[in-house]
Length: 371
Image 1 (spheres, rainbow, N blue to C red):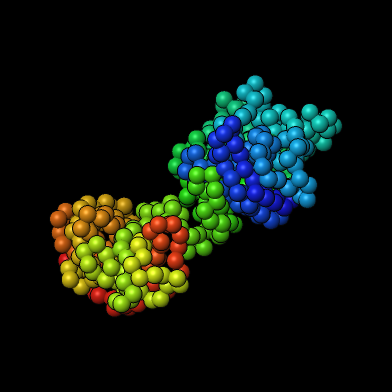
Image 2: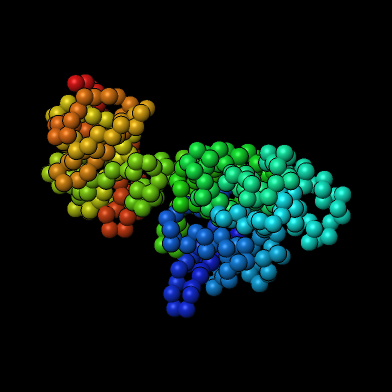
């Protein structure tokens, strides 16, 4: 195992800067997920740690050694790729043990280690097969076994589940996390899939346009997103946002229709300051028209089986409510929306940064909608 310290890292291509000001510490044995959309710099950062791309500025420290100038093989990292990168002409056993063969590990020891590693990832009965005879999940396990057998300081995963179907991705997420718990190696996992990030990570690193937006546990990032970007990216369905301005005299956020939602004091909030009030769909509920914080009309109902997603329109603003109730509503129906004050989030409309607050002060909750 090894700690990783990344200090003021940057990456440029000619005059184009794609990443800058990256500071990150990964503790011994920690499983960190770097999460973000395509093009945010997450894979480039992983490849810089592995030594597959040069770092333009700053430094990367692995296990107490600055590795900027070291070759990939000298960094003690093992990487699992999206496309598996297996040798098609080799058997599973030969693929897993290839690094040991190159290192001239004696054959008997190599075979014993291959067998033990294959058993740890459920491949003991497939050692004589070739990659073309395996399913996608089995091939990904071979790639993981090939990394595990090297006993590296650090595991690096570059979107390894992207090529799998939805059901198999869930199974492989569970397997990857169980393997990590058993081995305890320091791991960094890159993905654009928030479900993978939330379920796998000890800590999430949310990236946007080459910078880190927020670092925290999955619960911290979900419960207290640091910015509009994080709030909109984490959570499915996405958080709702209502634009408004702070009215000091009325001590609340005035929405576009003139309605004022009272809030508790927010540090540094100025009179007239433009803000966005956020509420997650699962924290809102439908109530009879006129009995909520604001009225809206039903635009579309999506049936999800265990829940129902009600897409509403408030003025010209879309607003979603996720509910396990089954109200008999049709498009155009008039309803109202209510949510617990403590579940509200407030963000600066200019900077997009979170403003700390305890939420809407009015704790009145109307009865649930029954129709």
